[in-house]
Image (cartoon, rainbow, N blue to C red):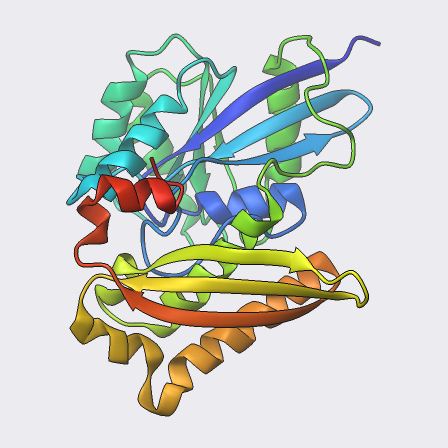
Length: 296
């Protein structure tokens, strides 16, 4: 039996469920998930390997009009992921009444590509069936898709069908990663994303979008089964620093506890986590800071 392999890019507007899908497919949490839109900042790979195929999924930042250099990087990352992949999964929400302007803009980009495109209509677990069929017809008029597949990333409904159809269009090819690898993200990058996610969950309004996380120390103790992690939490304004720390340090303590517990669960080791809050004015427009935090 010949082996199949390929790269699959998942694209869509912010908060459509791309990261939930990537984590569901990988069987482990590798991409940040919150109810706030545009939380993914890098293209993150999830890898599924069986005896018949290896699928490398690329989770991308949501595409929207950028407001700063970080936003420009995120949109650039998402669009670049469409180059040289074997399949594009374009995800939309089954709860939408009609295709949204952001979706139509993405479709216009997809029309420029020769790569096969599956349309994934997500959130069918909470959408009305009549609405799903209506959306399928409307999207079909906008572009000729290779296939249209209704799914629920939250409940896994339709994912077996999705994997089967992906396998059918994948080319024959080599195994790019070892069998036991589910992501190409290094552990310290995963830890940074988990820490950032907890601040996203706890902070309100625009402040979490100005949060950056830099892992400054990441080392397992030689004599004990303990992983020491130290991280700087950057905010954009001095006035935000107190909010990020919280009254009597409550918010940073809660974020640290939640992050530590999840990192321990994922890595299977006790974690000693230390966090410091620092201010870097307008860091999302600072190319040097973007490079420091791995965004450029």
